[in-house]
Amino acid sequence: MSATAAAIRPGELLACPAALRRAPVAAVSVVSVRARARAKARGAAVTVRAEATAEGVGKGKAAGPGKKRAASGITKPKPISPELREFVGGAAELPRTEAIKLVWAHIKGNNLQDPNNKKIIICDDKLKKIFGGRDRVGFLEISGLLNPHFPK
Image (cartoon, rainbow, N blue to C red):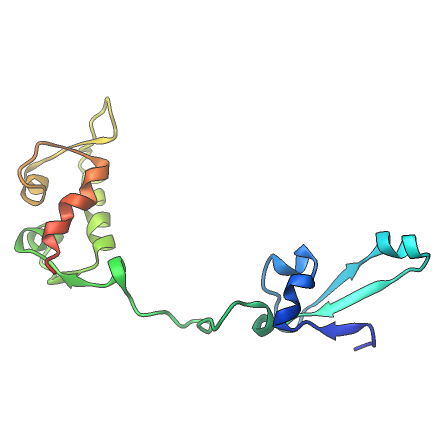
């Protein structure tokens, strides 16, 4: 490494050009920044070289590659009601995200959207059981109508 190249410390990241702040840089890559406009103004040709490692660029402590966080919130499996259990095929626990995906797969697979207004779902017998006996449901109401099937 030459005398003009220096490692970037996390606190110095704000002083770096925008090109360095856009994305984390691989651990062994070197980023070259040419400051020609300022060099011409001073009458000298200057090349600035900076090294940045992935550890020095990222914010906070990130999970390593291949590591996943534990499910939480709407992605955490929770017990479901007997009606929803029958609809999904007998699973005792299910995340809300998966329940919505299964409902939408059923709607799309059985062509249950109103042909004139795709925002309206025409409920068949299976959907009526989980949507409280309603014949027609707006697509924004689906997640709200699934809430009673996830007891606290």
